[in-house]
Amino acid sequence: MFRKINITAELLKTRVKKRNHEDVLIDEVKHILNSDLLKENKILSHLKFYNKSFELLDESEVDNIYVFSLEEVKKICIKYRLRFLDSQLYRNEIPYEAVLKIKDLNTLYHKDLKGFKILAPKKAFSKAENKLPCLLFAPTLSGNYYLIHSWGKEFKWYMKYLLFPTQTFETLLLSVALLALTLDLSLPVELITLDRSAPYWCGYRIATFFHLLIFFSGFTAYATFAFNKNFSKSNWNETKV
Image (tube, rainbow, N blue to C red; front, side, top):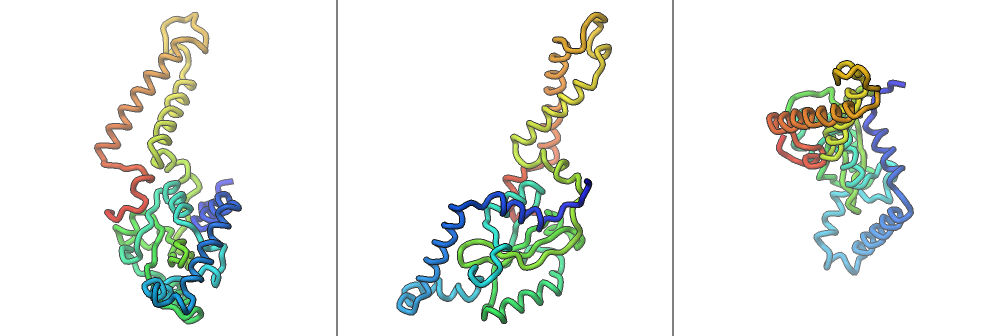
């Protein structure tokens, strides 16, 4: 029931849910266009793209299960308050196993892969913390990202609920409203009115809900500005850590 959260598994779930027939067709069109640009008679006119092809993976060569669009990565970043940044910004050493996988990819596909990205919590880019969940990606010719390796501990099961309010402004408002409603419903009639004849469902309870909502909204607004907290939706790819 209380399983730990594996970011790789969550990313795969997002990919399965999000991908539809139109997405598959778009990916196929991109692949055809990219392949066309690499034909001998077009190499000179697209030399910049041709040179770049040695630094990026071709999606037709790798396992498509581990190829993700930027939108899919962004969704996971927002849900679990993660950052998707250049590997140079990572404060710890990348595991040797990941380095070996990169070497294998370079040898197998005759590449010199560059432009790596890491998906990890903010602390991984600001502190020397090597136990955080991290995922290493390499860009593809179609503008997507191939998952090379993952390491670190998994998130606790409750993190998806704890981080829900920080996703967007809408999720924060919903969380505050639910908190106010939960507390309001848990209060006995004796604590919300001096009218002993008042039933459980009464106008006093509705008034109490709005008072609690105003109080929690004010406290949340103060805490947000005081601690300079941004929503995950706005800082998932922000390099300032």
